[in-house]
Length: 304
Ligand SMILES: Nc1ncnc2c1ncn2[C@@H]1O[C@H](COP(=O)(O)OP(=O)(O)OP(=O)(O)O)[C@@H](O)[C@H]1O
Image 1 (cartoon, helix red, strand yellow):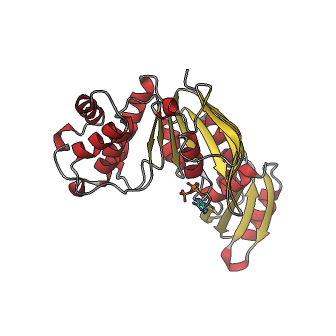
Image 2: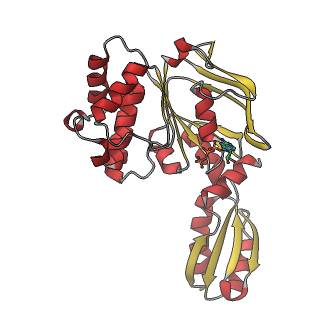
Image 3: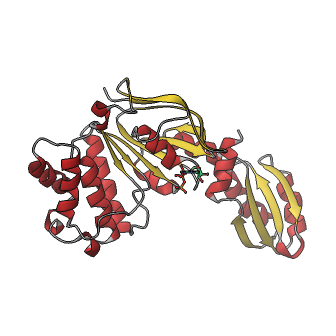
């Protein structure tokens, strides 16, 4: 059993509280750690890997403390966000380096195996400086896997990848999960998490804002009031019509800019606007959600 358990974990750097009283229980399969920049994801992953001590609270893997525990280091592989790869090494040399550092019993065999796992055998003899972004990520994953850890932690693994590279990496991670690994990856992109994570943990400003499967997180988002800007042939008439509908919380005329509307249910709202407009001869020129940025979703989640 290699459940990853965080109990009342906080971490601060001087006056900055990077992670604030987080409790999580992570089991096998893929977990997405979702949060905007600066939310504390990297700090949390470092603590999960046992590399950074929490200021307070504890991290355990399979019931044992993650920190300063050689047996646990053997169980965990961390793929950091930094691209501080040794460009002058070949992929094979880079993975082998970690095999030696981890004192893997048969380093040559383990290196070859790990490189095969990420489909990099054909490029293993090339210098890392010649690799694409996706290949660099894959070789970092091979290096993190070379000692056969059960838990794989990845910090923004899809950063800067093109769609094909991303799909390939997603396939790899899904394959590891199917073989029973526990995988945690951080991301600030909702769609990445949606595509492969079975479980989603949302972190905002160091706080654990929400937890659940993707449908639950999505529901939290779509059930929240949304703001829209509408421009039409008669904003005033449309405002009156919309205000008569139960899902509309408020409407404000914004002069030339149009009509600002706050509504509860995105699905319903998308249906009533064109219907009301049609029934009353109002023409809609534009309907734009104004608060769809991830940050507004996060700040909504964290304030509920
Ligand atoms: N070594 C450090 N010294 C001081 N402050 C730090 C340090 N590392 C992180 N922080 C601060 O802690 C907070 C959380 O940072 P962290 O890197 O963990 O977040 P993140 O969610 O991974 O963000 P990003 O995606 O931008 O890396 C931020 O305010 C950051 O500035």
